[in-house]
Image 1 (tube, helix red, strand yellow):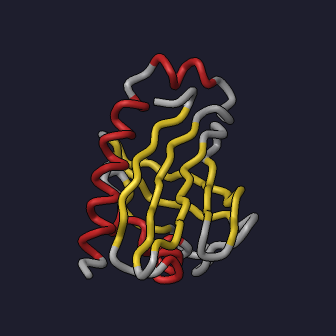
Image 2 (spheres, one colour):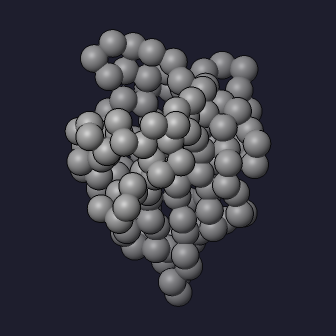
Image 3 (spheres, one colour):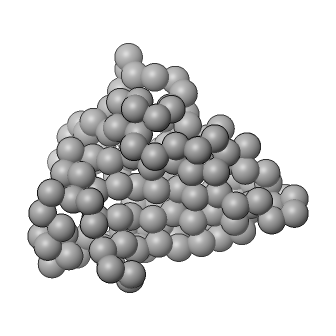
Length: 144
């Protein structure tokens, strides 16, 4: 854990543009989700994310709920991050490495409204494990 962030990195056997295509399509997010909480994109949202896009997701963590996200960082084929209502961010950074891509997923709560509450909760530890599962799932989608 670095400050108020947890992340993991994996090299995936495909190009950044193919991974970015998946990340910018909210309807595909449940394919990647290692936490088991992302069910599906809500209807009426954007089909492709860009800076400033707002998109809703149907979620389940014990009880079902809905969450609205806003894309707050965006660099085509390299970086995308969205934040939840509390201000914490999910960030995906892509770096080309020959014919592969180094993918780093980060849960960053340094931007949260009350970061101390997240720091004291089990979410950083749980989210780190979910990130590792998400990266594993991404590797399975592009087995090379």
